[in-house]
Structures are given as structure tokens and as C-alpha cells.
Image (tube, rainbow, N blue to C red; front, side, top):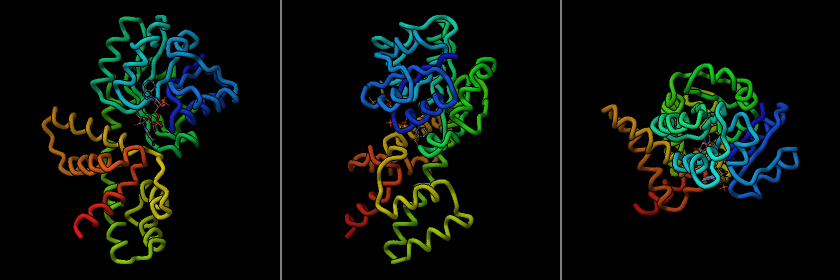
Length: 292
Ligand code: NAP
């Protein structure tokens, strides 16, 4: 199968590299062309548009920011549908909503294009190491066709069910991820006030009942003052927004998610949207200086 890849950001670049390493012929596209250079040197063909990616591929994967961005690469100028032929499989691996997934599947079916929603978790680390967890919604027989390609990027591949169910699962995942980060930032803010030895705090949190990916991967970055993104704060705000919309449709009340959303909204407002989710510690510093 010839694979196409659109969106070579923090996640997309290493994911597409792993597809190349697995031996697939790869055509890639990135809106900002310079970011595609590392792939060209590894042997990928760099296309000039999503249309050209579709023309040269049997399966097209997208790893772009949000639902409207997927919409643009699919149906916008020089979009995927302009180069697609019946039987093409399009896999959306970014995070948006079950509603977007269902609408993409329906609109693409008019072109004979199959759709899967296959968001991922495991962070930039999982993307580099090819150890992502991938949750897939859509037709089972379509999933089985592309499963080997997904295996090039991930270790745990779970077929969830109908189209949209991958995105729904991902939103549940994000609730846990976000509240975990709020807990870590809050504990570290208090630790700093109390003059606690952060190295010892790390040893305790990462070895006991409080342990998590958030603690293991992001706490050392906070300790070093490295706020560069593995996962951008603005993206987590987006995900929590979709989780709350889903909850509202199902009349579910999620007070902790609402609080996490508000904290990330504030963090983005004070200018940390393009920094990592762990830059939430800066909001706590800001709260401190406001109360003094
Ligand atoms: P990123 O580094 O900001 O990359 C976003 C990519 O999307 C870039 O290649 C960008 O192109 C492209 N893009 C955005 N809007 C576009 C548009 N309208 N048309 C064409 N290309 C467009 O983000 P990321 O961290 O890789 O995340 C990508 C997706 O994966 C998001 O949905 C995110 O929530 C999800 N995710 C991220 C992580 C993580 O840990 N980072 C983990 C799991 C899931 P340019 O280079 O031109 O800007």
C-alpha cells in the first residue's frame, strides 16, 4: 500500500518517519513546506498539495490540529477529494470530535472514500518511539486493511467501534490527562511555596500511587523550567472543549473537566497556548503574584 501523510508537526513528523522506516512508499505534505525536509532526506516524496498526496496514495493519514483543519485539507482548494478515487482510505489521527468524524465519513462516502477516526495517545515520546496507543472508529474491514500501517506507529491498537467512537474514546483519555496535569501543577505550586526538595518529591510521586505518564515525563521538564511543547496547551484546551460539548449533549455534569478547561483557557489567555500543557505551572505562579 502506498501511504500519504498530511501534517508534519510535533506528532506527524515522527509518525511518518516510522511509516517510512517500516518500508512503505510515502508521499507527504506539510502546509509549511520547510518542515518536510527531514522526510525528503529519508526518501519520501514531498507533494505540493493534499490533492497530490491523494493522487499518489492508497491510504492518506492526516495529523493536523483541529476539525476545521481536516475539513480544509479534505474539501478545500487542492484538497484530498480533488485527487481521490473510489477505494481510497482516509485516516484522521488528530483529535477533534465524534461529530466531525461522522460528518467526514458521510461526506467522503459520496466520493467512494473510506474514513477512519484513529486518534492517538502517548505523547511526542510515543510518536518518536513508535509506541503510541491508537483508538480506531469506523468499518472493521477497513480497519483490518490498514492495521499493519497503524502498527508501524503504535504498540497498542484498539478497534473501538463505529465511526466517531475513536474520537469519543480519545476525549475520555484527555479528561484523565488534563486533570492529572492540574493535580501535578497544583502539588508542585504548593511544594514550591513550602520549600520542598523537588527531586525528592519526584522520587516519591513517580514511585508510588501518584505515578503517571504526566509525572514521569512532564514533572522533570517543569523542574528544569523547560516549557517547550510535547503537547501544546492550546490543543488540550481544544480537546477539553470537545469533551464538555459531548458531556452537555449527554446531560453529564463534569465539574473537574470544567475547571481544567477554565484553567487552560486562562493559560492560553496569558500567552502560553503554544507552550506545553505542563506550562500550567506558570498559571499558578501568576495566581500567586495576583494574590500578593
Ligand atoms: P502541531 O505540532 O501544532 O502540528 C500541527 C500540524 O497541523 C502542522 O503540521 C500544521 O502545519 C498542520 N496544520 C494545522 N492546520 C492546518 C491546515 N488548516 N491546513 C494544513 N495543515 C494544517 O501539533 P501536534 O502536536 O503534532 O498535534 C496534531 C494533532 O494531534 C492535534 O489534534 C493534537 O491534539 C493531537 N495530539 C497531539 C499529541 C501531542 O502530544 N503532541 C498527542 C496526541 C494527539 P504547519 O506546519 O504549516 O503549521
